[in-house]
Length: 263
Image 1 (cartoon, rainbow, N blue to C red):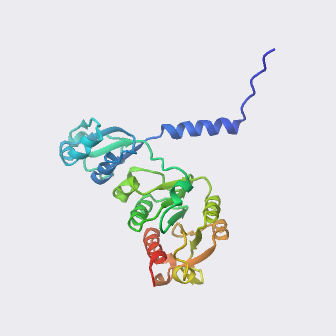
Image 2 (cartoon, one colour):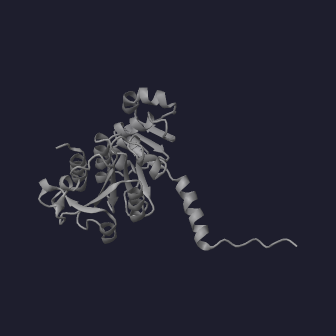
Image 3 (cartoon, one colour):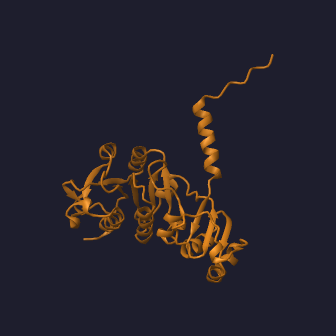
């Protein structure tokens, strides 16, 4: 007698559906810098390129190297599915999101590991700017969460000005669990809070050779209470006179510099 198939629980079905939907998700990148860097990135799966003649001429070498066949359109008939306010410069590229791998694959092995974690930072322009700073200062990764953080979008890529193709941007399920995992890897995890008593420099005095993770919250609400309870120390940026006065992307750049600066 054959066994009756066991019915899957609803949560399992929803998880499988979400995974399938995530695998089918695509992103439209736009702007000459973002499109060029994506075309030149061998890890980026490219699906469709729409360009004007002017943009095609400017991207000629990148298009040739990528091997993709562009769709040439008139500037007034630019038909890529973008927000009307997007400054696309005549170039739009449909791609699959990048897969950077696991936390350990990105956060272990650097000579002087630095990581940025973002607690509910949802503005793609801020995240794009943070990716640029992270690349400049050699950070191992920028880490957000799967929910309540900026996803990979054209606006984020354009602000990142190519950094999205080179700087690991991970989105983890749970920020507190990610902080704990980094701590288990040997990271000192610092949460930026304008009300903190110690500065980044004073907290890391004599310890800058250690792996350091910096956690930043959105302007206004700042870090969640759970995040504050999970980090090793709460710190502030001394020169700001109060973290609330700084844009989060500026704060990320200053915090990275402060964590690396030698006295």
